[in-house]
Length: 247
Image (cartoon, rainbow, N blue to C red; front, side, top):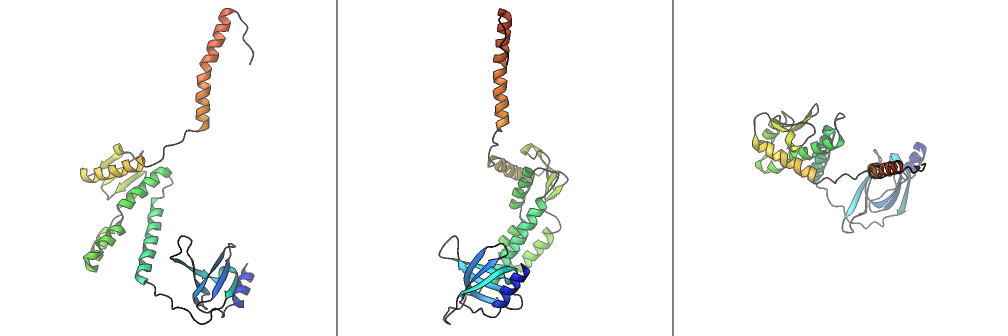
């Protein structure tokens, strides 16, 4: 695979021109075809603009690492007439990257091997409502000085965290197993916070699909309903002196 990728890259290492159409075959045998927007020879990174899979009005941008591509072919050379690519909004890119990293960090914090997957989903639902960075983003209009001050204060504790099997919110409210409304307790008797968290829990369980009964449970129920009939039949036959048919 490495040799194939190296030969593919060497064959076209300096042949890319902006506006050309290129097809790349990834190491997962997936083909990506698009228009060349940029190419960096040192890192072997190729930027392609491809048709969007969701709408014709937009385009998908792919950053291809040619070191991990098994084949690269130039389908159509550019004739020299092409539109300059639009400038990227770097602030928007940074914001999306930061949000992606934060969502992944929040997901990792929700993992707890000692509790059920349902409890972990509830943790994530509560953490989403108490998102530190969501709050900071909404308060960005206050100015960088105020935002940085609030960030430094909020980072002194985790808004939502695991304390053993318990979910703790704002170092004040605790939810213990089985994580229902009756299991919400506030260390400072803060009814406002407790009621808000109880609403989140109610909404979480109300929107979850009802469990489907297993076929085994239905079979056992059916068997149980048949048993009394069989028993009464045997008793009736025994009382009348009739032989009981063998099963």
